[in-house]
Length: 408
Image (cartoon, rainbow, N blue to C red; front, top):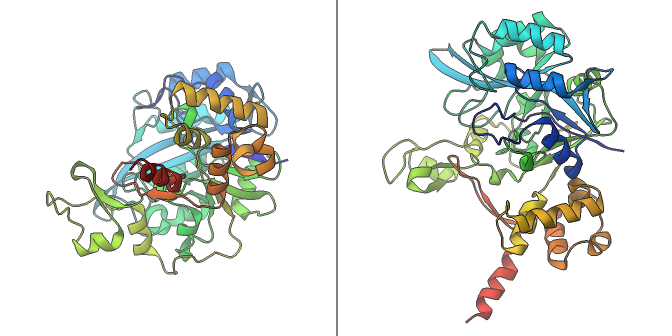
């Protein structure tokens, strides 16, 4: 029996998040998705910490429970500091085993920033200093650099990042066991950079609303405790870490280079032709994930890293239904159809990844069945995301063209 975990989310106390990002709604959505374990996110925020303590029941092994859903205590922080003569803004995730560690860690982190201001607080300390503080509070806790390629606020980001982990974390690099790929990159892109081979790649939703939970996730072979999760990540244990669930990275909102205000979207080669300058307004383009990967890559596209954790690409079921029904993803019609399907078949991930065409035919329309099969076979068209604009996936594009031709 697989064990699905989404470690990175945000609470209702983070900016630009839904008011329904609370424990009951998260647990309800986890059941619909087929997610067993969720990161709490935002444990540095005093009000969210109160909610967590009131809602979650601690279990042996460093996890916490609400109903049928397990939670692990996590948060994301924004480290702002100067290094190498440049201002740096790096987001990092922190994993801890219990509330006692959270309280002690929050007291320390509160010396470097206002924890009430946002679920993801701004801390005026370097990434290496963060790891040092976390380890002093608890040797069981650990830090994972978040969405490592995005232009803003990431380890390798074009605007304030570094070219290696050692530049960012110095001697504390040895305490980093995992990296979060982010929505705009997938493991295959990261395998092109050989220096990343020693780090386990994880994928998470970074959800700001319950419906986005699990858009990326991690699949393990069995239920794990906090210590076991850490050991699996440290050892890249392929027997226990089966695969990650991935967005098509082109759909991520920073995959390509571009300039949103001018409607300019460029591949890395197109950007180089324009010397990274927007041809409409003359300002510098926002350099996306694909460009940064190519800058740091020492392997050809398509390289498969030996011993790496496999992955499977998906399109969220609600997006598939929305395209077939020609309705908005968040419309009531799509939501009703989504709930009916996942409740009948045992969760979204089972529908997307496991149920056979024959089994699906008893519960979904032929169009939805065909769309699911096409996603599994990666027969989709994608308009790449850029400069904060999500990419657009088209699954039934051939049928749409035929219907348009029939009109003439």
